[in-house]
Image (tube, rainbow, N blue to C red; front, side, top):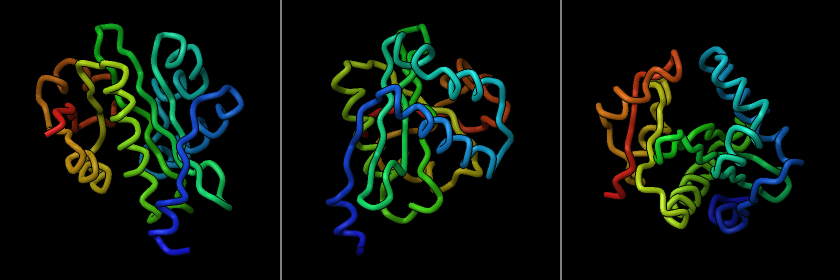
Length: 165
């Protein structure tokens, strides 16, 4: 299957509790491959309904024919009116299919539909490909976000704010 066919075939899936294992496993895969799973990760990954959905957030998935659910991303309310774009991952076996870009575009669209005024993310310089994608789709490096939220994860050394520009 070529990339054009794959891009056209990618499907967005909405959160449902039966997809919780995919949310957990996709994120554990990439986090453990590059870093160590932190307590902040475990709390969210083991309780996505309570920590993301119930407070007004969203979790989206991308599905590919023949591969099933290959990626996920969440919009997590932080209690201040802002939302963190968090737990974005694509299964290693599905990398190169542009699933991350497809998913990020859909998550940004969802944030805009939800009327989210401040959308930020926290990441690490080791995630260079992801940072490039975030920049491409309208996120900018932001010291204020780092000051307010950067302590949430020990691995965080990059904070970005969505400006749409």
